[in-house]
Image (cartoon, rainbow, N blue to C red; front, side, top):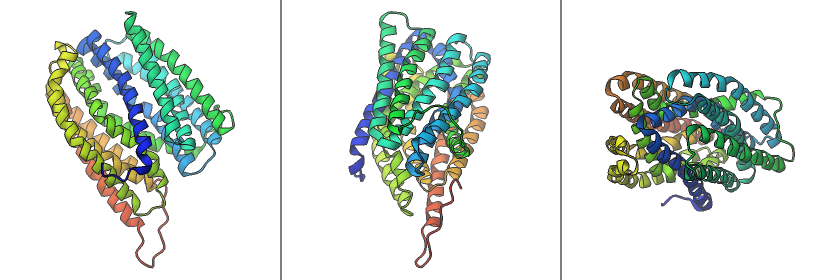
Length: 424
């Protein structure tokens, strides 16, 4: 850990707690539903989130990152940003909840209709508003306060799952109802907390074009990344192989354990890339340092995943025996993920969000083509091959783009600094 982490040490520690709580909640859901629904049923559940993930980027990640950017980097007032972003969230919910509910009922079999609609509505309305509030809090007060809000949300999910499982009443429908109630509560608290910090009530207000543009740019990037990482589960479902989707989804979920410290590092250093915008040659150094830490962690983590993979069917059931082989082949992705994220964050810090979005979208389109070509014939092996190709492509293109953009920004002796072009 030779990284220059002094000022980030506390944030990274809290980010580990944050990611750990999130992963624990997801893992409880995964273990319980994996054992209860079997590979095919769990595959349908995974398929639902693979379907809505790219569109959720508009309401959740896009709004969250845009709120942080316009407050922490641009310097706009939290009240104006919050009101505009809340209206954007509301518009997204009105458009996507009915459309995606219909799509899920049409293409994904084995999910109760009421549960599917309620899960989608909760994600687009309640969770999206909560994420916006977290972004504003992080931009105003720092990572620690935002992490505490996310941890509280994860703990409530853990309590909900524990109560439902202990009482023998855990189904997709009861989970959907419980999540709507708990998410609604934590969302109201987060909005209240944000309003107090901002000094004005954060309610829907006038939508600003610049905020829409930022949300769209971030959503393109996150949505494209979701297509690349989760689109294979949806294609496996659409190709009528839900059991393979469930087993492959289980392997991907287990891989999240190994990604936990990496996700913590990404989360804790995100704002530092934004605030480093004035350093014309610093984004490459920042990205390289972070990637070296990711590499130092990723190699032993991938090896550990390979060695523990045979335990997967013991934790789940014999229905997931193929998950062992899938997980062993997926393990090296832990290394690649650490090398593709930080150059992209460097581009963000240089104000090149437009280029960043193009790279994500281009790689997502490549992944869709590969999934469509390989999965119907080779099933999960096709998904695996496509994942490796697109992850490597994203990493190489990201580093090349960051190197070229930073060279353009650094003036030669005697030359004035170049002005940054926002969103170029």
